[in-house]
Amino acid sequence: MSLRRYLQLDVFSHRIGAGNPLAVVFDAQGMDEAAMQSFAAWMHLPETVFLLSPDAGADYRVRIFTPRQELAFAGHPSVGAAWAALDARRVPPHSESLVQQCGAGLLPVRVSHDAGAPRISIRAPQARRCQVDAAQSARVDAALAAVPRGALAPSLWDNGPRWWLAELADARAVREWRPDLAAIAALGDERTLGLAVFAPSEEPGYALVVRAFCPADGIDEDPVTGSANAAIAAALLAAGRLTRGDGYCVSQGREVGRDGCVELRIDEDGEVWIGGRVQAVIRGTVEW
Image 1: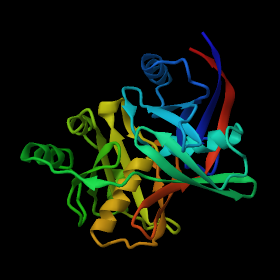
Image 2: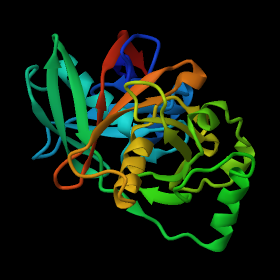
Image 3: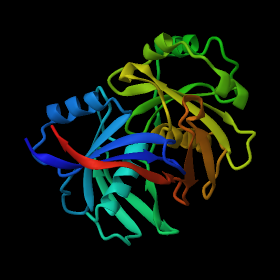
Image 4: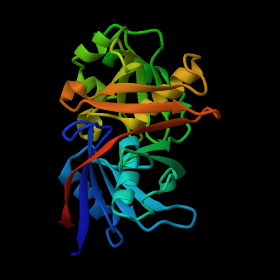
């Protein structure tokens, strides 16, 4: 076995102990998919990432695992991986732009060095709305049966993972919802992680409040979810409720004690960027 450098981070967090936790394993060459998946399952964090040597055109390469499967893309692991590569000086520490290689391809990363701490944003893969059948619609209606809904009808979106998105009536409905996790688990398949609900926020500084549930993937409620937030931004852009050039912040994670902030921006090409702050919590080594 090999001893590898290890970091545990809080992503989308202004302080340690908030945001979404992420395990980072460096120099993962020599670990096969089974070893990576078993370590991610053992950690049982929302995601674990493994940093590898990149191919031409990228600055670093990452593989992303939940406790149950590998993902082509996920938001907080991508933000955290870029931060970790900078922190470990696997890329020039004062870089302002990077390229991440992952299952979704080559994704551009922007770095702003704010008060000495890098602030990361990454362009999410372009989201598309998925066609659904009557049985799928019935299952999402059952999952949302006991909660007041907002204006935007539930829909399924794909930006690497797939998320069901549902607007609820208001922020209170989002924050106080006690979902039927079995009904939400029934929405999951090999590509669909779960259900994200959202509503306009009444709190200064935040445009939306969001919660995301993925019990079929081993995590009942994901603390702070980059890919779901990027999909929500794409859905609102498609509905005409956002325009190119818009930027805003999202509150997510408070209900599970992991209060986080996701920064979103729609660029002039209509692409969605997600970002935020990262905190290092554990530095060490791992043998697996």
